[in-house]
Image 1 (tube, helix red, strand yellow):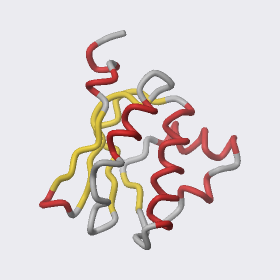
Image 2 (image 1 turned 180 degrees about the horizontal axis):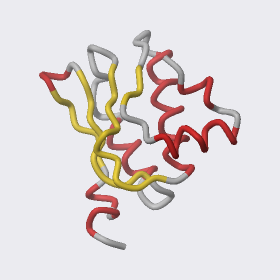
Image 3 (image 1 turned 90 degrees about the vertical axis):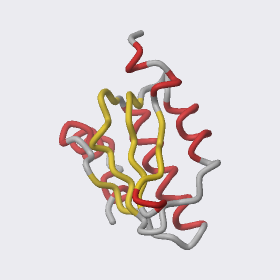
Image 4 (image 1 turned 120 degrees about the vertical axis):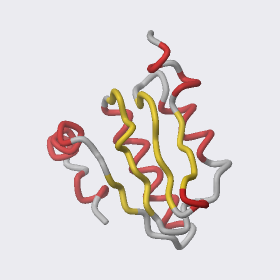
Length: 104
């Protein structure tokens, strides 16, 4: 496992004064649970945007994290929009039939 794929390197970070979150690192079976757990300590972004432009590697666990974040948004009354999701990951969402769960 490289440093970029280590659980410590995978994190959501509040940006723009808490308006947005940005994800940096790998979101895989090895890192997803830790990244999701750590995100629970952050208030959801006030603008409702989570940016995945910093996503360096992903597998199906990334979809599970994204769905969990969308559900958290619904539970907290804050709609979440996912930006920068790689096309390959969106293709995987289509194959699994979960693309509607990721929509804005």
